[in-house]
Length: 152
Image (cartoon, rainbow, N blue to C red):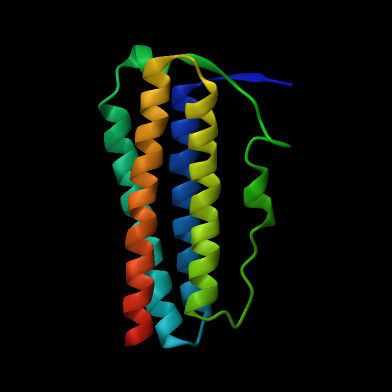
């Protein structure tokens, strides 16, 4: 079954997602005894806040007409089901945390890609392709940061 959504609803979801993930990383950072993991989780928390800020800036550059544009969205077993399967466990190392962070980011990128590929509206396609490209750059930053931390 397809559903109709507005561009701003998906952007708002993404901003809330990054805010919640940032707070999750903060809580996990406080609860770990491993200094290396704490440093990485603090970095991830700041990174998520920066992405939320980027989304605010991106949204501010769009017209109200574009933000209020409706499009048909074909959900895969629930709009954002992939996020439900992600679990943090005690005793995770840098690789484990990196893998889960990448998994979360890829879930959101998958939403952007599905919207971009399924809409016939060229402007909406451009918006979600841009968000996808921004997210890919953030994934590369995350991977570089994780590699740097592992060498310390």
